[in-house]
Image (cartoon, rainbow, N blue to C red; front, side):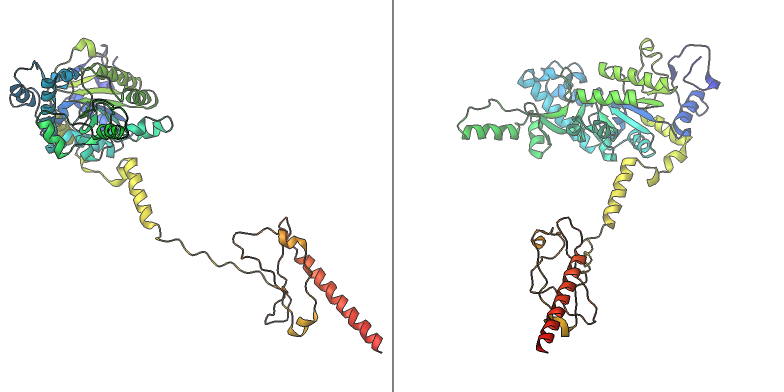
Length: 467
């Protein structure tokens, strides 16, 4: 029994790779695929894309008579370039002629990439992100067309990814994982500094030259000016892509993130588009993700024109749709027009929602904080004017010099008397505090009454003496 299809398509055969050569509305397998993708609101989709999704973007292929491969081969006929793959091989750096061919080819490819626009397949990936169905999209492409649709890619955060704390959070915020780098930036072969293309760099690449790294040159000149030995030959700038035959500079980071996706996430559908699955690392990725999807009774779909060896992919891929990627997306649009036509901000990606909410919150923040309300002053001791000059000074104590001063309280100034006149005849006592911060108002009142009683006693004795 096949656990990867619905009951109406089940059979007693073992799981096999079902090939679909034409797109028909009444095809039961295509209907099942559409049902799996669109009908369930909880489906999480993982994607893997290759050069096939960019064929309609305006980037020439490597095999046609007018393709980039033949253009470079005509420009450098003495070089042994047998296929387009040879133009992405690290062995091109073996001599000056092959380096010139590599630089010229990269300039042509970059110029075509700058003019390219996202295809219907790229827009389909962005729509899945907006509908919160896209878990991750791994791509073998280096054109960077996904960034034109605001899809967050790994090359934007590669240095942030190489951390111990918070790696999972950073990884989960990525939409696109670029397995082979990004043509839209350059990196130094020595110090690995990343930089953008400039008009000067484009001219040098077009002439078959790799520009020197300005950072390496500055560091070398600084050492010479300080009287130190030169660092030797400076590094050169090359596109920030991974070539055949070299180690992946971010291989450990991608492997760590892939382990999270395989072990900690719950994908239901794995869609592979525009790749013939010939790279060893990609083969391993497909088999690992396929096992994870099948553990959840999900399906694995391949959309590509080229044939596959059935013995290799039987039990790994469930459906092989042998058609153009954009044609399949157009077919899905006709089957589920509501899904493609409705896209609101409430349905968008959580990361985009967070940006919108943060912007709205910032617009509501007042330009300046409100003024601090004035602090109410404590009542002070007030006596009638007729008794003001008849009382002795309030005795002082050692505790006054050691009182704790509050940051918000005004500076204490010793006066001749803490007594103040007020409009009424009531007595108000100024609060005092001891070393522990407790009120000493009661103590002040006792001392004031004692002084008053002593004065009255002295006046009475003086009167008696006169009599």
